[in-house]
Image 1 (cartoon, one colour):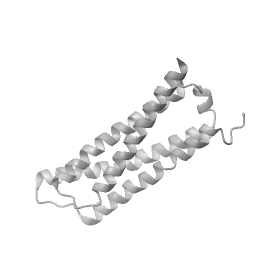
Image 2 (cartoon, one colour):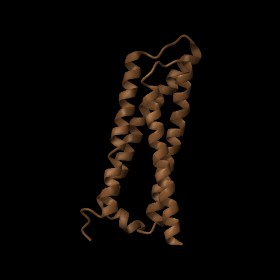
Image 3 (cartoon, one colour):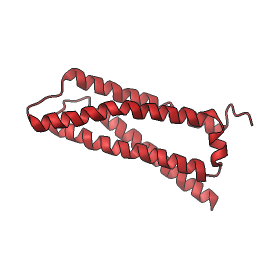
Image 4 (cartoon, rainbow, N blue to C red):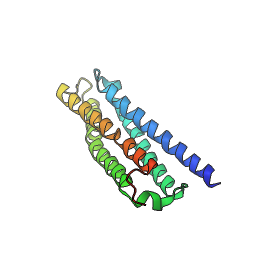
Length: 154
């Protein structure tokens, strides 16, 4: 039963990670083009799903660490898990900036349907989303180190 639970938790964790990356990429792609009213609304919806996926990644990761075959002692006794968590927290903190911008953009559009996102602000939000993507690409490196036991003293 433990192997089945471990496999199920791993599956849900990986699925959540794929959804997270997909919606991060979707934000980056939408921020490349012209931002009309529909795209601004879509960015808001995508950002909500992105947040949900991030929470799912966090929840399934902790469930996997606690109830998975290796157990919490394996994960929480050395640095890669903390590097993964720190990177995740930095990404979460950075993601607040585009989220607030998307909310503001939608509100500006509701007040004035002719309003347009300033080009420089759009470029800045895209750079921030790309930064999130690049930081997120570090997390699997820490996961591989952890899975292989590289640098583990015991």
